[in-house]
Length: 432
Figure 1 (tube, one colour):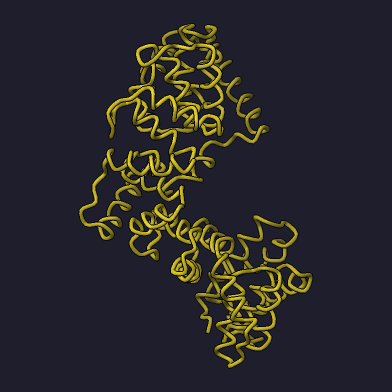
Figure 2 (cartoon, rainbow, N blue to C red):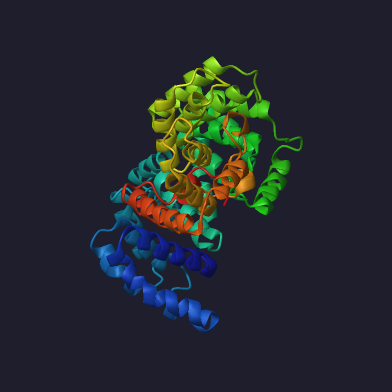
């Protein structure tokens, strides 16, 4: 049934997931977690199961479906001191009745093992396979965040694969998401993403565009991770090569479905003439569609275009407003243009404090050589040029004042829910 390694994975996932969702629920797991970390192999399997069981019991009995699900697993494991398959089935059923899709699947599989299948359990299995995304996402996200053993990843991927075979587009989209993050248990991630995109999953097409564009910053600027992902993809598609043309194609597929990030990226490629012939009119149209959805990249591309008279008719007041909104949401290219504008008084008040504030935040959050990759043809100056110009005008007193202003801005953005930037970018990052 469930092995000890699977239990450890389950246990860590419980701890991580409950910690994120309920402080009261997570408190009961803290002691057990510390015991396992400190003593590891010296802690007996039976004692560990018993302690964990006691930590979950009250919450399971109170009706929490995640606690019920993992409480059931503590009964299901054949090494547990409370091993009882019928009790496990009972608790899986309780979690299933509360809408826990993974519990529905486990209840059916255990009922087959026990020879206790029923039409209701079969119906629940079909329901679970049509709605697998919440629990699968929980298992995969917490597993990757905590660096836990891989057993539960297999469980979630298996669930998603079953659903995908039945045509569940959300399941296909999740397989694409985790496959492109370098999760080894998703076979042929490029093919999965293509299938998901063609079946209506807009995010999948966007992720394909990001893969083919191959920007460092989309891989959280860690070259080794980026190289490892290329290695993984070479097994999926031996002739895989980064391609701006392919990136533009997939961005367009998702842009037509209304995906704001894809619209922004297609606009940027059209404005830069990369992957497509340059077309400022179309670039403006797509950037407007993205900006309306408050997408930081869309706000940035539109602002960059309207601030640069070499590209289109300038609209300085609107450009300043758009770039400020984009910078507040973490777009590095917008930050750089604001540094230039406030340093030189170009279409904005000359304000070295404001310029330095954005310079500090930019340097704290981003890798300068890679952060604005793909935006170069739209920006007023490169990041290095903008920061160099600013430094020539600074005194030590001004630098200290700018540092304080940056701290104040960061706190203000945090209160608005716009900080930290890196975590917001990780929502779409391919690997990290």
